Length: 244
Ligand code: NAP
Image 1: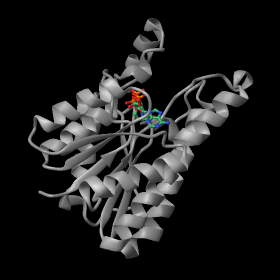
Image 2: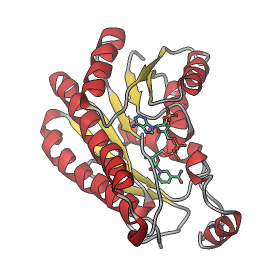
Image 3: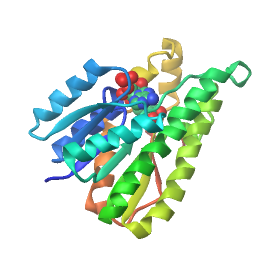
């Protein structure tokens, strides 16, 4: 296929599933991670076994210098960049009255600045080619209120807003920008939720199950296909009916 996709936070969870799914569709994959090198190398091995190229890149997406260095390396290794999936994110739940400064700043830096850092670098490359696809992973917490997620929901609301603005600015340059907003997905991110609360959350989902990382990956792959070539600036909620 000769196309390249960068997935941020692809060492684990949803990012890994997206990387594998796009690899199955024939994309060469740039695997970004922050700290978990072993897991990232494992992702790259699994991708390479599918017959496409995979290279890992350690970069904290909230650090613009590290992001610039990563994009430079990707250009050297792959040439053009066709798809960016902004996925690397953190959650650090706390009731408003308990939110501490350090956690707040870290969440804003990774979940908002990190997305803008990568989108900016990707758009610079894609604009030159006159085509490209950016997909921002948001969350259902951007459209419904979940107690303890004042900070997280604010960051994901920002992701929805930036998606619309980026889409408007970049459409004339041939770049589509959309967001996917998953509900609860069974990854490491949910491991901190106590068991009784998990049961309550599942009960509140009309489809009575958490989503899988593959559910999200399938939607991302669809958005990358030509079937969605006229869609931009949209937020697709993928939550088993939770937000209804
Ligand atoms: P996860 O299992 O905790 O994995 C997080 C990934 O992000 C890891 O690959 C991690 O890399 C990477 N990462 C974290 N901070 C980073 C940074 N500063 N720079 C680069 N990479 C960084 O999370 P997940 O559940 O897959 O979530 C992925 C995305 O989906 C997030 O944006 C999240 O908000 C969103 N989401 C998740 C759910 C859910 O229920 N799980 C629901 C809605 C939306 P390392 O392995 O190197 O640490």
